[in-house]
Image 1: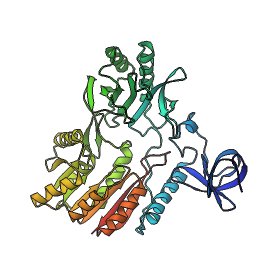
Image 2: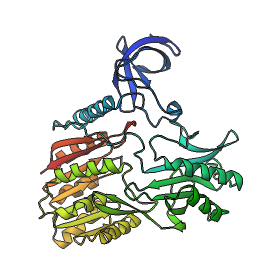
Image 3: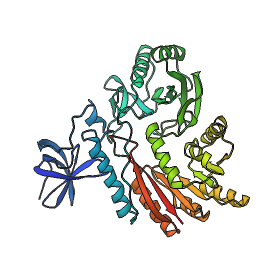
Image 4: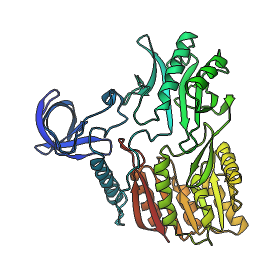
Length: 449
């Protein structure tokens, strides 16, 4: 019925979890980015499939009441803030719906989904940013990869990042141009500077500058150190990360401190946390404190429990609960993260915690050898969720309660369904928005035996 480049009129009735609006013409679904529920639009069809199509907005005939002015000059090219064009209240309702629908449709979970908790801040909340550095069209670009591409969109003033990052990025750009630092070419695997990686510790104000290089040293690095210290006195650590692999993975495994400390320190839920370039840490500190409070509440701790924290990273979740348990055991497969976790426990005077460098199956075997059974297991897996072996290992340890923290409610729903077959019932779920203006949302779920 329809062909590419046809113009159609439609109303947006829903938003997908990729941030695209959904409209229908004669029962035929059309997905349109940058739209809001109740928009009335004239849309150009740009890709036709058997049962659906993709379109772009040609004209807004009648705007949704949820629409707000877009305050970012690279919003459409970047694609990171897929929901920046709608009000935050509307965004929260959309994310609430996503979690509810994922749990119901993917997992067959009928447990109550509590009202979403919004982020304390919608701008400037990210404490970490990774900027690709490329030469494109004869221009040195630092910024973000465009949506579904590896073309760099120049942007040093992203509204999601701390304002201090802008002056640091401009200083690095000027340094590279002045000293003719070679820039990485990902097609030829040549050139030196690959990424600029910045971390900020909100509680202490410390900033880490990490330059990812395809080599062993950075020419004139002393000059760059002096400039960064002058332009941003909050910089407490300047690090080189060596990544000579032919890969899209941003960081290599070897770090060299050029100046300052090897780590910066932040405070999360009263726990002082040391952060290296390789440490996992929630990007929204204030949002993370809300998230961890929910996880602690769901864990139902009385002070008598053995708590097992799987995927513990630098130990932040478990250490925030250590004062409420008999013993904390954290498990992480990345050795440097385990060392960070041990150091964090020591520096905070937490004596009832220990950390194992192992996977879930190995940790289960270790506990079994010691004759230990966890009362509560906290799971905070990566976006792809848990592999079946992890869920089987957890259920095999027979904890009373499992608390799962997930940044992907679709894989969360899948994992909850798998745990149901292993004898665990989902009691409730709590969405927590950690990533305002984007299509990501965190969720905490409680399961009991």
